[in-house]
Length: 119
Image (spheres, rainbow, N blue to C red):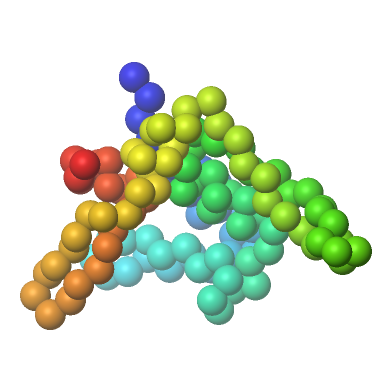
């Protein structure tokens, strides 16, 4: 059985283990959580963005950078594909997981949603 969490974890580890290549910042918090900065304080870049796109699909998709013409203006565009559209979208991306700890409220999505067994 495919595990979007294991697949996404493997991709996240590529960012964590290669911060110079991907131009990302990696910080471990006192709680043990790891924060990967792909463009807030870190420079980030196209390769980091493509990797985050793959992570967001639970590792079940590909992301490629192509250039597209928009009224004579050539701009970079991300093209995604997957053989597992239902799981990559509904299992890995669909928001709707209500997170409501005391004094805070958010909608959760991403592969962790499946790990938390949130439909």
